[in-house]
Every structure is written in structure tokens, then in C-alpha cells.
Length: 291
Image (cartoon, rainbow, N blue to C red; front, side, top):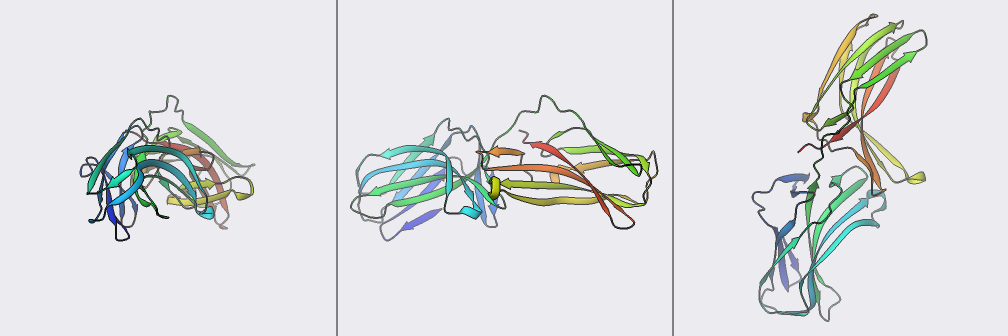
């Protein structure tokens, strides 16, 4: 990744072991190198002065983490800034490589690119050029994951759906917390059925919440939806549910990230009767990233 700074210089940021590092697809044509949360960020910046010496007031690189709200693009919330001086004031008279390493940087949040919000990690390399209104700046993004330990408590989920003297359904899932390649296993029991149910479906929903108060935005995205029953059930009948999570583009559950946004997942059960009336029951599940 190279950048041109007028006619004077080009620079390139390379991460150590970049050819061996896993890449995460960020956008259509942009794959970003992946770092695990507690991993050191190490590499080299190569500067080509194109034969023209550069007087400067210092050279530095920063590791930055910030959150961008797409409805408020002018304001970024910076939750991490770690500077590293690469050279004191002086003059660049030849092409030069600047090695860097950020050690024990607390990358506590995962990278995220959502509907209304983006959490971004990147390096910003700067040459503070003397007697110039414009410094030489180059940025390079990278992606961050954080592995999590299995939850110590992971009880089953039990819920009921009911319409007085008309419908009583109980459904149970084997756990409340799942890793992102897990399988959700459950069963639905019909305890009382006095309406004509046509079919039943279940959906996995991702809900992104950004902002707060009057500026709270909720965006729901249905990741999958499938029919689990076609035709009228009878009292005492049970229906198994099995959902493989590995086929979907998931993240862990994020709760109140830097007081800016949250990301939650829900199982949504929908019953549809012969008059096309719809009955809903929604239950949150927690997702975590397994090593």
C-alpha cells in the first residue's frame, strides 16, 4: 500500500509476517490483516524521498482506535491513541526504513463495520515537515479480534407463548450462550392449541443499537429465516429445532461498546394462523468468539 505526497516522497507501511497473516474482508476489494487483541503490532515504514531531501521536526507513528457514527461523520470518538517516535527533528537525505513495534497495547474492542457505526484500528505515520503547511501523513488499517473464554454459567433457555384459553406453547433451547460456529438445538412443545395455525417459522436477527436518547438508532437485520412447521399442530406435539451458526457472518455480542453502540442477537419465533395473523416471541442469545 503506497501513498504519494505531491512530488516529494512515497511511503509504505508493512506489517511483520504479512504474507502469513490471516486477512479479513472489510469491503468488496479491501482485505485487512488480522491481529488478536493482546498481540503486538510490529512492522516497518519505508520512505522513498524521490531524490529530494526533507527537513522535518520529527517523525512518528501512532496506533489509533476510534469509533465513527455514520450519522455524525464529522465527529470521531477516539478511545485509543498510542504514539511512537521514530526520529527526532532532522533531515531525510536518503530513502530509509523505520521499524516500529507497539507492545502490550490494550485493544479491548473488536473491529466492526456496521450499518450506522464503524470501529476502526489503524496506524498513522507522520513526517512533520519544516516550513510547510502540510505534513506527510499515511494511514494503514488493520482488523482486531478478541478471543473469549467459555462462559462459566450457561443454562438452558425456556420460554412460553400464550393467548388465554386459546394457545399455550413452551419452547426450550439447550443453552443461552453460543460460540459463533455452534449449533442451536431446541424443541417446541404445544400444550394448548385452539386456533388454526398454518405454519411456524424461526429467524435469527441481529440488532445494532447506536447513540442514546433522541439519537438512539436501532437497525434489525434478519440473518436467516426458515419454516419449522407446515400445517396445524395438535396438543402434546413437539417440534425439534436445529440451527447451524457457522454459515452466517457473525460477530460476538457487543454490549455498550465505549457507551457508543451495542450489537445483540435474537431468536424470533413467529406463528401464522389461517387468517394470516402473526404471533411473535423473541429471545436474546449471547454469542462469543471461541479460540
